[in-house]
Image (tube, rainbow, N blue to C red; front, side, top):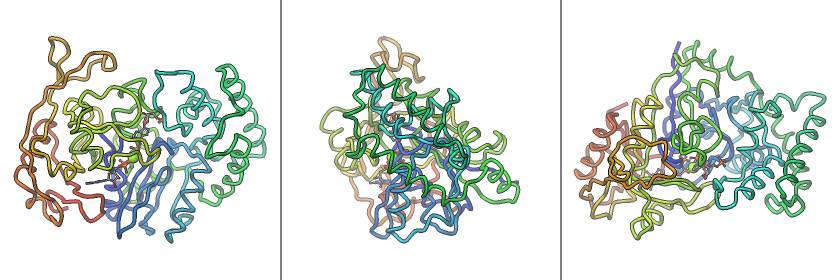
Amino acid sequence: MTKIDVLLGLQWGDEGKGKIVDVLTPAYDVIARFQGGPNAGHTLEFGGMKHVLHIIPSGIFHQDKINLIGNGVLIEPNIFRQEIDALAEKGVDATKNLYISKKAHLILPSHRMMDAANEQAKGSDKIGSTLKGIGPAYTDKVARTGLRVGDTLAPDFLQRYDALKRMHLRMALTLGFDVEQFRIDGMNLEEYEQQWMKSLETLKRFRFVSSEYFVNQCLRDGKRVLAEGAQAMMLDIDFGTYPFVTSSNTITAGVCTGLGVAPSSIGKVMGITKAYCTRVGAGPFPTQLDDETGHRLCEVGHEYGATTGRPRRCGWIDIPALRYACMINGVTELYVTKPDVMNDFETVKMCTAYKIGKRTTDEIPYEYNTAPIEPVLTSYAGWRHSLLGITEYNDLPEKLKEYLAAIERETGVPIAAVSISPDRRDVLFKQVQ
Ligand code: GDP
Ligand code: IMO
Ligand code: MG
């Protein structure tokens, strides 16, 4: 019986999870998503090509590997179809190696409408949702009113779809939302719905499975399974910066509920962190830089959302948040991405604690959203060196290695590898795998 390894983000998302999953896929038999949905944007780059995945796991370009969409994931059929078409354009036929849990919930067009209606109702307190319908679809799941992938095969599917849609329309009315003016990709609700129904036919071409049996059988057969997280620790519904979070458990515990595996089946937990920090959407971000340095991180790092194109807020690496993430997730090894973005920096800073009034703490306070948090910063000399062409961890500039050693020391977790460009080739493992 093998264990299931986990790979997830330790910050506010976009740490480079997709890229690292793609790099690690050759060592696995199955890559499985366990939560989130089309709010995710996971970027893969190789052979001069760039590809962004939203619902489909990042192992899909390795056609001899099985990719699984677990029960904890949300599927929006139109976005799913677009992803399948985009893969086909690149010569990838996903029908052969992509399996879908019958228990995964569906995002209806009216869930997307409700996402917009809720955000509008919140006014200046809005979350900055990706507007893919995540919150409303998970709400229906928990309220026991949702529709699942397996339901599409039931004879009463359309009646149930209509009942749910009517409920959403009544809710939108209560919120004073203008349904007539609402558009998704330039289409009104009915036009989008027609496409959605057509896309269901694409979805039905895939193999629907009871993913809990499938994954557990794989583990019993000695197969290697990698669980790919979406979003990240600080966006977790329970432990993130609530209410500025997503609506799922993005943490290691989410693997158990999102795939149906026992806690004792968890193996390695690989935590991904940028060498700095970003956040897209609203919510607290103590190390955010609103100055020229923040602007430089954004521009050099191309920090624009892979799903929405919004500019990401940028700042220094946040050790209290990373330590918290390592604790909650049981991280066994770190992957550090994007140090190359700071190649020209004279000084690189690291937040090691928070100052809140007269108190200094290295814990994430309950009042994270409201307390005036001042980051306590330690400065490190920049390495002032291009990382282009470096192929061995040991050949990284000494100053960068010192900065990386400080991350290990502060978190108490060893670094497994460092990524130094968007390309698949540029991941330097610290020890030979
Ligand atoms: P994910 O959501 O965690 O998969 O990350 P995203 O794909 O949303 O964002 C990460 C961005 O950084 C993408 O544009 C990647 O191509 C890029 N990227 C990943 N690793 C590196 C790296 O080491 N250096 C640089 N410069 N870019 C990277
Ligand atoms: P990946 O997997 C970064 C953010 C949104 C918003 C909040 C809630 O690419 O790292 P939602 O649409 O889930 O209701 O939005 O969460 N968010 C992400 N930020 N990366 C993501 O995914 C995100 N998915 C959601 O910006 O602040
Ligand atoms: Mg992303």
